[in-house]
Image (cartoon, rainbow over all chains, first blue to last red; front, side):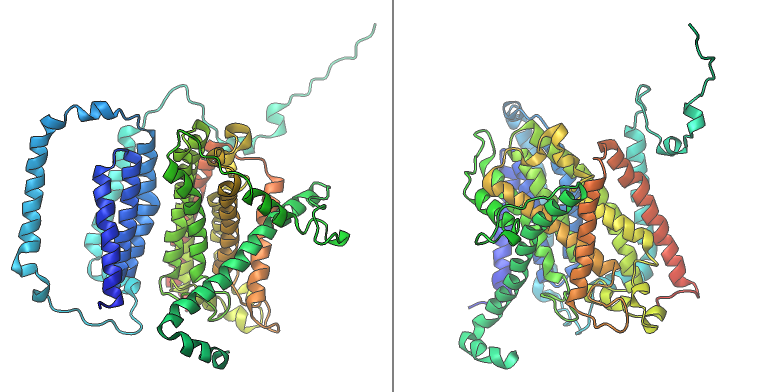
Length: 201
Length: 355
């Protein structure tokens, strides 16, 4: 009889593995993206089981709540011809297999080696009663690792601005609304009272 | 209470914790569903009175004339329950059925961390605020999946509008909450409320002036308006804009599946109103020193915020889509960032009131 945590772990892992498999086997790209959402959510559950509640919630907040929404946004608008996608299957099979084999070898090297096996790692100390994952992470990021963290944020900012600058096109015929101008309009700017002599017949 | 429950606890043994938690969940969800039902009636009545008409006044209990209109939500619910759920033949069936569930579930799950009174909360977790943000951000899937699975152009346009709108306003909402957690120095919702009960004005017996709404006034306004936009309520209801895309993502839905979207919308409204009360209006705290704190204050504050939702709907015409995007990205996000920096400076200065 395994304990409750192990049972939850196996339950979540089973969902995670099944959902990840469906991500690559699902015919419909929207279904595949939704399976990816499910696998992110389950991965969040597993992280929660490791008592990394900040990371777990951040995963759901960032990937499920924002990234995948935009991803779905794009995927839903694709007009996909399944027949045409199948065409290059045999041509792409060999390079695909090579890449897959490389990745498998890398994973074996890391996960299969004795150095990384669980019994080599010291068991982490149990957290104190008032331990806050969020606070600890914040303290580390903003004190010990503040330079790498700020550097990463600047690089991301540059990437955002570069992406916008590369894709933005100014169309000449687009009309813009300028609310500040609209609000600043006075009666005198728009209406002209003309004094005309009354007509006599 | 504990002595009364002890025999039941002994009887159930190991099953006690899940059973007792389920009881608590029902104690939250059932009144919430009642509130949702009667919020629809309140909406129709209040907007009716604002437009000098009576609103629903016919359906009554046991033929008592004075209760006219009070049974309207129950009649509506029964009617929708007995209607057929039509599955469009070219739709993605599983997702079509799943979408209303995905819309409703997050708005109910978020209630787990809402503190109703000091200590009266289902799950008093440290990262309560993060949990709320993560769970509410999942509500958008209901709308997106509904729009795509319906295989209808109107529904699809509605879901695209919704995805862009919700992602845009979530950022401003998140920044508004970041300032709240900065001044509270906690992500725990109970601690956020308790933090508002301290300070100069609270000691003078004027708790209402020590709540977050005063020092964080721009954030309070941004959070509430972003909340209206997040729940797709008028004037931000382009997602289901009747005059443009009929009913948006809900166009192919009928019967109870359709009703679930409405339940989700009204449950989200109540959630946003309650969260506004907790973050900015002092939750269960009493506004003045001589009245006791308690759940009734949270209920009154939430009702006040909910009234604003209805009032806005009766007052403003629908925003144009590009204006919604402009308000979200070009007005709210800069305002929140400026106030975030300002509050940060204030907290570090000797004038800080959050010591």
